[in-house]
Length: 77
Image: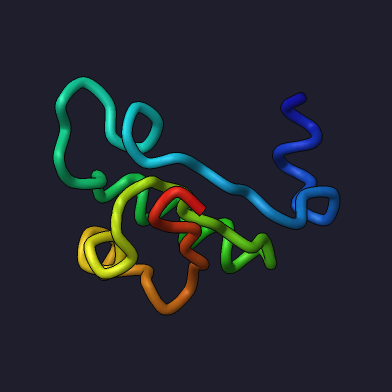
């Protein structure tokens, strides 16, 4: 598994849920580390998708530092 993660050419897209995945244990804002990880993925040519039942406008605010570099799957699809 570790080799697959370091070889970005095999990974084309990562989709992640927000509540309970990126935001755990009552946390309300993504951490600086999450934004750094998303930027590393984008720099490696990996498409990053934020998936959530939340409203699109709210997700764009929540992920403002990377909102121009990711895709959003919002409002339950």
